[in-house]
Image: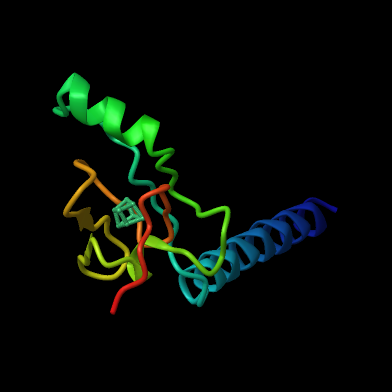
Length: 105
Ligand code: SF4
């Protein structure tokens, strides 16, 4: 009887370990791009913060055809990182938007 309990416990522990490992592998293999934010305003002047808010800058555009990475003013960074903008100071998300959006030529 004791051996049956030990075997059952070993089975449950090893199964749980295998499932956890599979979950880690599945999460690591996901093709979904890593999400990130570009909302850190630390170090910006009050005027720069006001500019971000008055132009309604957001990390996720409300207009799918108008994203910062398609804007004339966008300064691209490496994939998965915040870029910049020639007009709006601070980190800029490639999927972001503000009311100054202008189509890249
Ligand atoms: Fe994005 Fe506005 Fe800068 Fe264009 S002007 S890149 S829409 S923050």
